[in-house]
Length: 347
Ligand code: GTQ
Image (cartoon, rainbow, N blue to C red; front, side, top):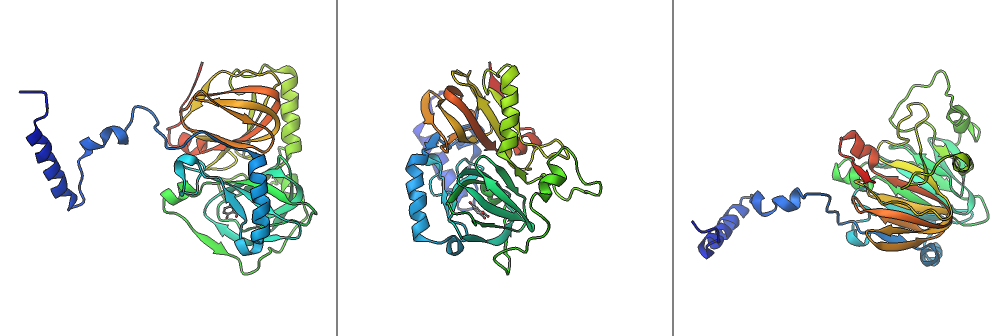
């Protein structure tokens, strides 16, 4: 028997494929190694969105459409490897939302979970389930799945935050629902700061009963996060890959703050030259402070405040820091861990 494929065999196979194709069948052996590759083979590409480039576009969008008309006035950050699919990684959505002074974004709720990470401005609010929080740069805010939310900006400056949503994951599972509230603004109950008073002080109300997997605390102010990282920087050894890195937690369970998206904040000291790291969760970074570069699979991405960049699944990356940097990040790590899929590798 010859190991070389006979032309007649190729033709016979093709004829066979064509025949079964009509009955919606296809041979596995033609696609097996693409389906089950040796290691992640993501279409997601490394990329960096420079604030200085996108900020004029965001302002232009502000002149073209109101927040009310748009429902949400957002520029979607589309991964260059996933254009037209409204996503920043294979599993996650990110966008930059603008809300101008005096504007409101009407109340709705959806099965997708959302996170907000404030990049610019101060004094706009988001209301979640009738509770209002005023947001400032560096704050991380949660909109849990199926909770009514609306946004407003009573301040006198524009505000921009990064939205992170699990839209592609929920789409993959065909579990999308959306409902618009009859009133564009929610009636606010309680006093501002109530949620933080209840859950933001390593305590909880005695009568509290968890109703979902999402953290009952939905506002994580930058002031607290920054103070924690500052303290760690003073007398701890930086991790060779990630410096000083904390993950946001649900204060009641100690688990992830959100079931589908893991959120982190890290500090990288001036002069830090990190070791290579990779993990299976494609990660979206947003710089809050400082300057540096992230070298992803040999390609350098220079970042400064408010820049957003993506490190795709399993591609090695490392940090070189020029000015002490603070980086927020999020990924689908909680999902991968829940399914026993998550891996990481570093020296
Ligand atoms: O603020 O509720 O970027 O529903 C995309 C969809 C933001 C929001 C987005 C949304 C929202």
